[in-house]
Structure formats: structure tokens, C-alpha cells
Amino acid sequence: MQTADFLRLIHPVMAVIFIYPLIGIVVNFAWQTRQRRLQNRKVAENKSRINPGVGKEHKQFGNWLTSAIVGLSLIGLAYPIGKNIIRNQLWNEGRFQVGFIILMFILTITSLIFLYLSRQRLWRGVFATLTGAGLVIIGCQDGVFRRTNEWYWSHYYIGIAASLLMIFSVAIVQDIYQDKSHRWRLTHLILNCIALLLFIGQGFTGTRDLLELPLSWQEPYIYQCDFANKTCPTPNPQPPE
Image (cartoon, rainbow, N blue to C red; front, side):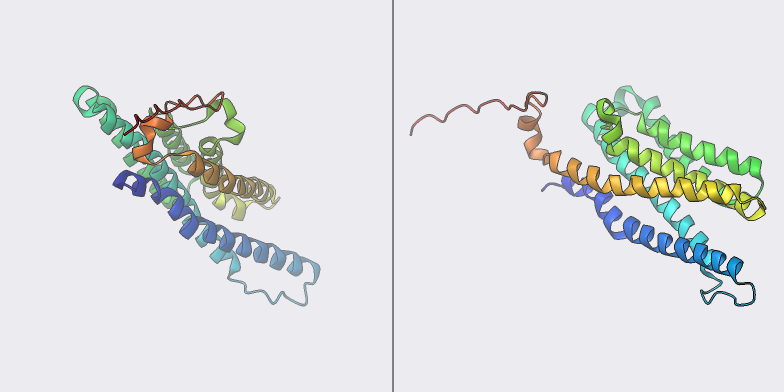
């Protein structure tokens, strides 16, 4: 394996080490939070024995999870975009494009930070929109393998959708606490159940894509193959010695 191949592994390795354990922790705290709320409603005189701090911990780990997912998405996008820039030497002829891409990475991270700091609904909506738009714009750059013809089974599209749902969940946290009708809480529950299913799908699509990607030194031959018909050119026979 060459250096480029090790860099490609950063995205899946971080997903295995950080993202999926965090998902398990957040789901566990979410379940405990809901169970405590339901138990307190049913028996007012006997309060639930579940730690009352689970709600706060659920929110804290949820914020960490959202930050990790957005960061992981940016890392996953940075590798193919950077590879495309180096391969085509865009800094010579497309300096504006390279500068724009770097600026979008910076603005996306900055918008996410301000989303956590915002308390008013307007600004939470603004910075959530900017963060999500930044991810989408970066994902539209050359070099990113999107599998658009199979968007429903695409690691890219499923990942972007899951990231946008997590960003939206952070944006509505304050509304959940202030809403007496619990509509925002129900919205949060439904959207995050969908996000959980998307993360499960990411486990399948990410593994599939790793199997399909050749090592750097194999690319010149592999990309000569006809992927539609699943055939590869026959190597020239070696002359007898």
C-alpha cells in the first residue's frame, strides 16, 4: 500500500473507531431518556429510577455525534477532491476553484460552530442551512464518486442525507424544550430513527465501496475494465524465454 491508500483509509477507520460507538451511546441515552419520561407520566408518585441526567448526556453526546459526522463527511470528501486537484494540477490553471473549495471547507466548519453557539431560532436556521449547503456544495466538486445512477444505494447520497438530518436535529434542540405540544420532540424522534437506518445502510455501502476500490498501483489496469459488462482486457501473453 502506498501513502495515498493509507490516506483513503482515514475515513472508514474513523467511522469504525468513533462514529458507530457514538451512535450506540446516543441511542442508549435516547432510549433511557424516553423511558424515564414515560415512567414519570404514568406514575407521578413514584419517580423513575433512571438517572435524571440522561437527557443532558443524550444532548451532549448527540452534539458530539453531529460534529463527528460532519467532520467525517468533510474528510471523506477531501480525499477524492484533493486527489483530483493533485492529478490535474488545478493550482496552475484553476486557482480560483481551489481557493473556493478551501473556503467552503472553512465556512462549513465555522457555520457548524456558530450553530452550536446560537440560541435564537432565526440564527440556528441560518447556520444549519449554511452548514448543510456547504456539505452539498463540496460534494458537488469534481473527483467525488457519487454513483448518481444508483442514488438510492449510494454511499455519498446516503451519507449526505444522514449528515443533513443530524444538523437539523441540532438546530431544533431548543424548540424541543420549549414546545409544550411535543411536536418538535416527535419530529426529532422520527428523523433520527430515519438517520439510524441510514447509518446502518452506510455500513453496507461503505464496505461495498472499499471492496470495489483498487489500490493506487492497480488503478491504471482496473480502470480499463468495462464495468457495465464486467469484463477486463486480456493481458498480453508473455513471450517464451
